[in-house]
Image 1 (cartoon, rainbow over the protein chains, first blue to last red):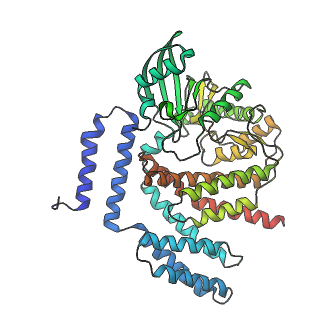
Image 2 (image 1 turned 120 degrees about the vertical axis):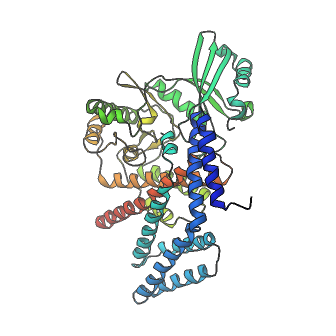
Image 3 (image 1 turned 90 degrees about the vertical axis):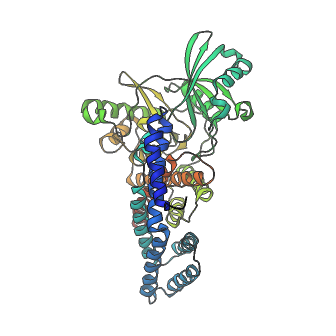
Length: 149
Length: 333
């Protein structure tokens, strides 16, 4: 249906589920599935507007790693070189998820090093994990969590 | 629909008459799936037997699940054993170990009637006396579980072995379900492996000890449910669970931890608590990842999206606790 954009179609699906499906359901599990579907539709709609969240995540990680490579050049040249290698490898990957995968594997290798600079790699990952946790919690469906109790 | 033939009253009735005739089933009136729970498929089954109308619980290994491997036969044997030891658990009515019989391996259990409190339950917040009583019984039952010796589960030589066995399970589950690399979790598992602590004694661990898994009657616990994560391990492991993934009004810390120690004679050192809090949160994160993986591999339960989101919230806390553990280790050495 060419007239509506993707977000308009998703919004219509959400309204339909809320108006025509949810009120007719007696089964508690089925109701919860619809609530969870509505939350998922909202998340997908947000992605259509703002893009894959991994694009921003990769930018943040790469910026942080670039600074780290510069800062650790003097005290930990090997660590700095390994970070540069990871950044170069990731830069050649267009797909944001594949790029994140490449960075993730490289970061796992960095964390395993016996090097004082590794603490700052971990700090960077912790910051990113906290940010992702915050974003993910936006898309948590309360009804879904309650039903699992 | 998940469950297939198992959730069809007619098919179940045919099966029970043919393959479990000793139960004296005349008619299966209804099978109703419980909406709560995340892993095993659990249903309420209303039947007519030689003794009259009866309610059972049917618990089956799921098509998809976030805490595999499932083994309903093992769980049933454990329930039967700890039930004989005096713990209030559902009685085992029948076990079907052949998945081809009705599409799933399953067990029929007695239905434990009673009240259930949720982790966030306004009845407890509104009534301090009730809350206090529930907390006390909660700790007493945990102490009883930990003092149950005849459980039949395989043991370990020492605390580090039992902890490392659980870390190994987590590592395998992470490898099986990691859609995107998780460097912090991988690193946490390495640290948990390295710093596995000693403990004074190894006991029966419930593994999922929280209010929603308990049934209450007249202020007493009459049913301890969901034993699929039970194992032998450091008792602090169950305590740490109540403080993290299973957190609620009954977190066993401060005065409740003191009461637990008084009942069991256990001494709890802070480092073991932090160790097992970290391990429980790693487990919680991996269950979240398993939820996402399940949906990406054909699963249909959309609640798993929220489970995955919740798992992500544990990751930064894991890293923080891991730093505490490493710091404590450095100070020791």
